[in-house]
Length: 291
Image: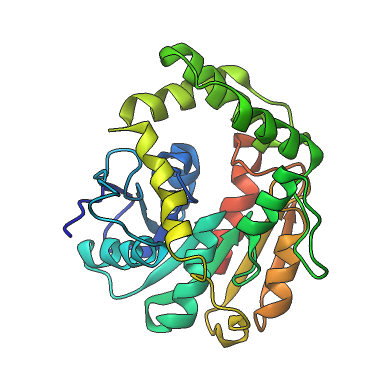
């Protein structure tokens, strides 16, 4: 099946390439323009893209053409190919970090360095941990740490609430979700959040299509191989905020399993990328991707 994926570049085509990989159900513009601009100003060719079924990329009739997260992972390689790149530095957020970790295992020749932000260790089953937390079920011994109570309470209410009616209600709900993901360590700029969520809402071909990412995960629940992170050869930087609400403490577990990986904690950061953390993030990534 042919999938057209939207992407755009910042910086010069002759500069060192960085591919930004966003998380599940998320558009590429969640990598802020200002952050991408900082990386480009540091001499990087920065590429961001919309996953299939998000933003301006193609939407899929999942019933007719089902896919799995293996296909979403392979889209990363297709973006590299489309930009004429044999390899790049991968900078990945949330579930995008799972894609980056798996590519570093399966296709090491295409991953110059790996940076994972607000992510979980490959093979840890973080999706199941979150679902058990939302359902109030006990976690088996050795499970990843649960999300914060604020995260759990919000998404429990979301699951049982009626769908929003109209554009304004939907954007208000998207802002409320962003507030929870932002965490409690930094002030929340509601005006900026509204501008971002209006942009996300209005540029999407079909906002509801993003839910196909959940169906893709259910289509192959064993997507994540277990016990393979020791195979990662790419120099790896793991970044987590001190106020991470969705995957608290998961960064340290990634760093423990990847040989030579470094862990950087960003003070006040949650699961979003607000302006207050751009300098620290960009500085760390520019240093990590120096060739």
